[in-house]
Amino acid sequence: RRINRLFNENKLIVAEVLQSAESMKAAVFHLEKFMEKTESSLRGKIVLATVKGDVHDIGKNIVGVVLACNGYNVIDLGVMASWAKIYEAAEKHNACFIGLSGLITPSLDEMIFNAQELEKKKSKIPLLIGGATTSRVHTAVKISPHYSGTTVHVSDASLVVDVCRQLLGDNRMAF
Image (cartoon, rainbow, N blue to C red; front, top):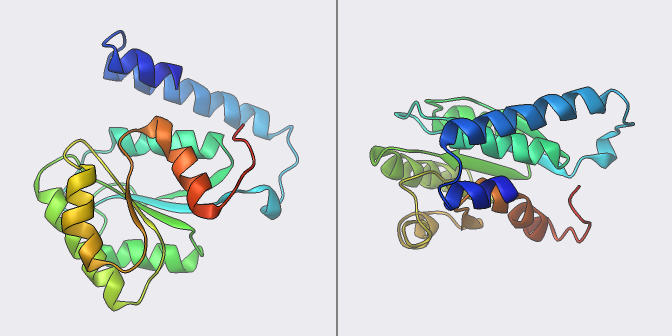
């Protein structure tokens, strides 16, 4: 959260945030060799994707690192992911969450389309919405009405672990 605070105070630039995230990812990768990990020690699985039509993934990658460092199994579908690919991965991995990311304005419409298609499949997997052009209002007014499952806007990576913990009803402290 300190990195996020420094970034919000314009004391860090995006490249430094990414470098910090990559450093943390490398440290966790090294430490995981020494940690006993069982399926039950995972907090849950999340499918992350930048929606179809968008190639921006910096924020999504940071969210993925933050989640992985906090015990979540992250299935990252990369960029330009179709709703079908997202749905198939969520079903295959029995995901607890689907994270949709987008940076450009057309991504907002693609997120609505994803919600509509997931609703047709009767999915109830919570959707986490994020990206520079997204907002709490857009999520509530434009996406949520098309999806009967939970839909939450996550404004930055530092909040995603708490959001996931709350949705899972997990009172354990994040590490």
